[in-house]
Every structure is written in C-alpha cells, then in structure tokens.
Amino acid sequence: MKENDNKEINLLQLLEIFINWIKTITINLFGFIGQLLKLLFRHLILTLVFVIICLSIAVYLTRPSEKIYKADAIALVYGCDAQTVREISKQLETAGPTKGYASIASKLSLPDSVARNIIGFHTYNVIAYQKDGVAVLVDYNNIYPIKDTMYVKMRDRVSMQLLVKNTNQIPQIQKAILNYFNNNEMLKIRLDNFKNEMNQQIVISGVELKRVDSLAKVSYFKDNNQQIRFNQNKLLVGEQQKQLFYSDLLRLQNIISTSNSALSNCKQPVVFPSGFAVDPKPINGVVKYGASAIILGLFISLIVAGLIENFAKIINYLKTKS
Image (cartoon, rainbow, N blue to C red; front, side, top):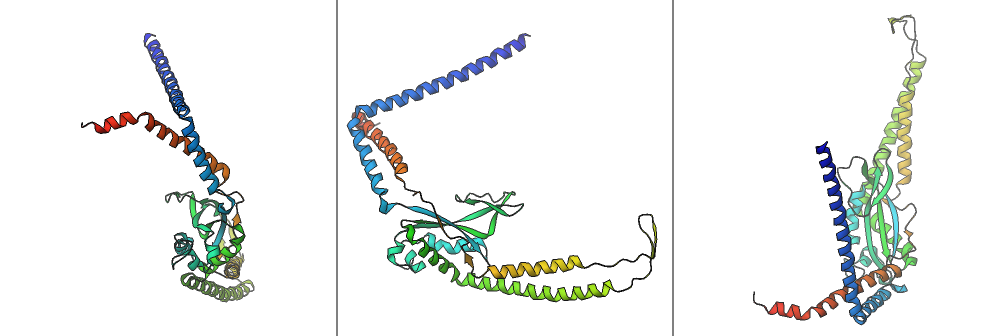
C-alpha cells in the first residue's frame, strides 16, 4: 500500500510541475508581449510612421493595374506523357516577360503588350488514387512521395497555372500556349507514332475478329464425337459440348472500340478540355497585403526602437577590446 501511495503522490507531483511550467511560460509570454507594447508606445510616432509607410507600399502594390490573378487548367496529353510536357514547359516557366530570345513573348509569339502582363507560368503533377485512376488532387508544392503506394502521378494530364494582370488576355495567351506545345517536334512525332499504333491495333484486331468469327461458325455447326467420361463422379454418355468464342470476340471488339476512341480524341498532342478558369480574387488582395504590411511595420518599429534605446550599450560593446 505504501508503494502505491508513493507512486500516486509522485504522479500528482509530476502533474503539478507540468501545470506550473505551463503557467510560468504563459506568464513570461504575456510579460514579453507587454514589454514590446511598452516599447512601441514609448516610440509611438516612430511606430505610426513605419506602419503608414508599409501600408502605403501595400496599397501601391495592390492598385487595380497591378492586381495579379490566377488561372488554372488541366491539359490532357495524347501520344506522350506528363513528365515530357513538364520538361518542355520549363522554358516558359523560366522565361522573362519581354526582350530577347528567352523571353515569353518570343516563345509564345505574343506582342509585348500582352507578354508584359504575364507574371508567371507553372505546371504541376496531377495525383490520382491508384485503385481507380481518378484524379484527386494537384501537387502544387511538388512534394508527392515517390514511395507512396496509395496514390500515383497521372501520366495523361498536367495541371497548368497562369498568373496574369489582365484577365481579358487569357484566351489569347491560352491559344499561344497550345500552339507552343502542339508545334513541338517531339510531341508531334510521338503523337504520330501513337496514331500509327492505334491504327495497327484496329487492323490486326479486325483481321483476328473475322478469323475467330469464322472459326466460331464452323465450331457451332460441327458435330462433336460421342463421349463417355466421368465428371464430378458422374458417368456422362454421349454429351456434346460446343466451344464458345464470345469472350474472344468481345475482347477484340473492345480493343477496336478503345483504339477508335483514342484516335478520335488525339487531334493534338495537348488539349484543354475547358480552358483556363480564372480565380476572381487577386493573389495580391488589399486585405492580405494590408495585414502583412501592418505586421511588417510593427516588426521594423520594434527593431528600430530597440536600437535607439540600446544605442549607447551597443557602442560601448563595440568599443570593448575583449
């Protein structure tokens, strides 16, 4: 009993120590915040100046002509794979707005008036649930784990994101992006190879379909020999069985149907099913940038106020030799 009482007391003491530690941390945290507020209040004019300057910069960066909008689209890839399309798109992702061969205006054959409104272009992998192959999310942070056995990168589609200032120019930019990909020699060659492969599958499956159909007709009307055999401990005399070919016929017909469907879809290497969808909320909104400006202004004020109040100590420290 004494051992149990001692254990219970020790556990209660440990809990009390933990609660006291939490209490001490909370009191010290509020005390630290209070000291910072006192520091800002002692230099209130300086604080207001920095906050107003930061807010002014935020308002300037979020003026109507500088608002940046995000537009996303899913690109379907035919004859190639998503990784190849992402490699080709790197030239667009690293290109500048105007001037020079490496500019996005040159890559997309756009006028400078349109290209200068393009802030950025990015591509991302689309992640699917491996069991049924249905897209579940877009890997915007490029943190998809390679060893994940539940999800898989989709090979037939790529997520594309466009950052622009003028949303009215998106249809023109979208057309230029499609021309950039669909005129790429590698993508065109792979699409032609894919079409040839589908055509060959249709031809071969059609020939095989006729052969199996002819074989089925002969088998259906051919008399089988009388048989005597045991089946599940039963003696069967004179049973006749016909070989059925419907599974082979259905498989060949499915190959032909799938190949024809693929050929009807793959008109170009890259296709946008619905185009770029624009988010009406700008990424540099006034509220977002305003809150960030206030926090930044207070932070700068704290640093400057701390330097002012400890200026003499800092000078003395720098003058000391040791």
